[in-house]
Image (cartoon, rainbow, N blue to C red; front, side):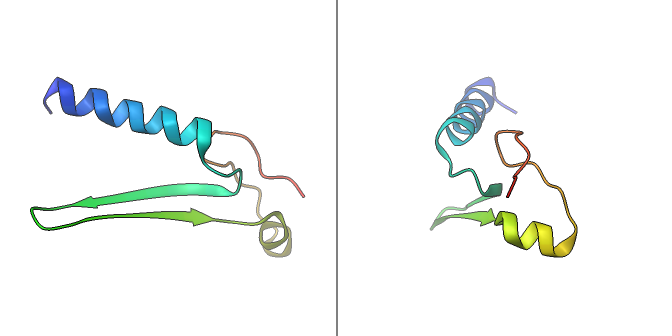
Length: 65
């Protein structure tokens, strides 16, 4: 991968870690010549507790109730 692309991906990752809501557990980016789509997946503490799951958010912190 070209180093400028990797640099921008790293910058996006850092921005997401710093600014995404605490419940965001994943981020998906789709690009082609006609469109750009992004999706953030969130899990609430209640959802995780009900499912007996412990999960880290995009920043690496455990999501706690």
